[in-house]
Length: 340
Image 1 (cartoon, one colour):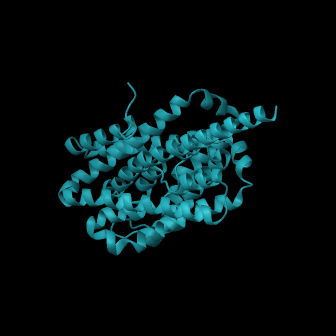
Image 2 (image 1 turned 90 degrees about the horizontal axis):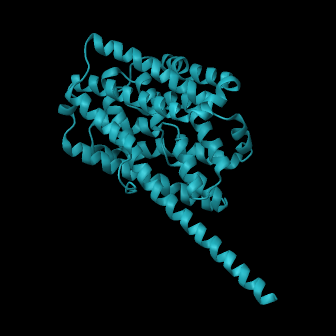
Image 3 (image 1 turned 180 degrees about the vertical axis):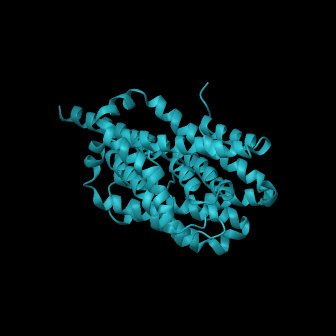
């Protein structure tokens, strides 16, 4: 039986299970240090495989659509941080300061890659442009995200190191493996394409490892005593408001700028989403260990909301375009018969 469309997917259920497991049986002491070492290796492997998978040909094919890419990047790295700061007086009372720091961190993250492309395809948008925009966002986020975090995220959640130290850690742990994967793509790219299940396993497995380590440390520091149940409900409202505004602004702006319908769809899906796959490893590098759990909690919730909402939108728009194509084909066939 097919899974109902609005229910969490298997990976989201695994994330929830990991948080519960870490809450009941957190790792600590020397085991926690060893676990953090393992997660560092897993994150490096994740970005290495992403570098090996990324097709330069696909990026070049969509790179000429520069107006679209600028709008997507501005939405990702300017609109979201502005919304997070402007709405802070209104939304921050709904959550704890640590959770709102997580919201601001969420606002600095790059767009997703896989789901942005998938939803653009389902909705019959410009897929090559989506590949280019989402990939560029992910790569630029390695540099832009830590810079934005140093500017807008409250110091209580940050690691306390200098911005240059944070950038160096990002480069060493994320960019270097990514570049190594790109350089080795001619040799291993074919194997990666044939074994996508391996990449998916490393992708999801590394995130689950980081989430378990982060929540273990947070639980040991008293996370669930610091976050009341009402704040979790407030967090749901904050994430929903952010996503709704991002979708609305990208819809209006892309239409006002005269983009085609296919390009509008690409801008909406690439410009309104945030990457869990990039965000969790980045949080581990940027923030103090005890703060990572509270910081990634908003991202995990936003991730599920964006998947549910964007899946519904993509299916609706795709079905509407399919119906329009069928009507146009039927009208054309009727006209052809009439001319005979």
